[in-house]
Length: 630
Image (cartoon, rainbow, N blue to C red; front, side, top):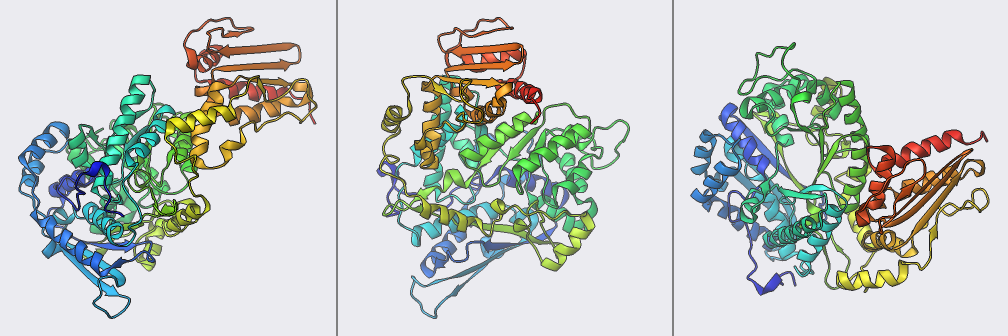
């Protein structure tokens, strides 16, 4: 069934371009060519879903596809596009890349260990795979090999799926992100289902981007990490650096205490100050990285000769940071506090890239915005490997596979990360490195790579898409309206009620049936209904008001009619905002036109700056402070 394809076009298989990889592989290769052209390395493959095995037939196909990687070269058209689109890739590197060719027969070593001694192609087994050679010659294997392993599994083993609906699924995800103001990129090369899925996802995201732009939404689809698809679809390639860079330099220098600073020195030496300046912080734990981040940065094209009194620090010079492990909310707090302590008032960027979906992106955006930082998202497997089994509707769980640097110049390489579930390397050596860098042990179960597939599988068995969820989006929305739109005003917090009796969770029961339905029905619920909320200090209802406004926070942008009445002793504040432009507020007079956005603008007018949520929070704290004790 997996042979089904979109639009009855021939199903493409395998890898066709050297550029079918992530941008950070090219940027790192550029830096390796400059500083470490003779360094030898080794990479190892790990299947973190060991129960999901390839068969002998799948292994043979994989062998053949890896062998074919040696037939590819970078075309003149691709080189010219890189020169125009990626000016940070210098001429020496582009000249090297033009003559570059992978040599899998020399570099890739793989074996198949069957579970039973039989020549049957259906026999499952364990794949052992390693890549060895010069760093500059082997750095480009990781992404295509991982993509091919994933493709092999879903071509030969899990075949109960089709490409049907992938364009619309990607589009709907994109629209949700864009409508909530999220800035995001597609990061799904490594664990994609296959090349065709990647095509369909890009088509869906571009359709979403076009529609969002026509509606004036603030969200933005910025591009893709995949260089080939960036060139093919005319979007920007996105990416900077990977853990591999820090791991290798630490191993080469055997200086783990200073590895973060050394890695940044070489990076600035290759590309210059402020170029490709999103820092990956968690290779040896973010606290250790931040200590290095406070050091002065060398001048462009140099690796030393800094003037501590005059040169900016890395934290000042870098555009922002990337979060790839650990608890994102704690990370945001840590980074916000760090920049504040450094006296950095510039609004820095936080790029989230660990196990994202729509709900997480929206949640992290709210927290990051509130912290005074700029959020961005690199969404991967959620885009390029989100399928259900055609026969049952249950989740078709992706493989969790990685290829990590295991040694450089004969010395072991390790990664600690901000979650011990993502540590890689020899256990004893990891322990020694932790002591050297002052590693702080953290565990975040949602980010544990070893358990993530089990969680996905369990979630899949808990929810099977209903007949409603399988309807076209337009029909679903029509039916939602009949269920959740009320004729009269919906009250949350009742001035005339008794203490503590006002309703806080006014969301419709339909919103709690599944994640998909919730994401689709709540915008309709808040947009099409009229809401009224009252607060009075003498009845303790300001607590209820605060609870309700916190619940309301993600949905203010949808609301078209809202009344807020607050009684603060002798002070009475009344706000009424609706889509017919009759926004008014006692104590502050204003008028505004703007339809659906009028609620946010009306509330912003009361405070003079900030967002509606900022205004709400400030006044809710004031209300709470005025409540009688007890």
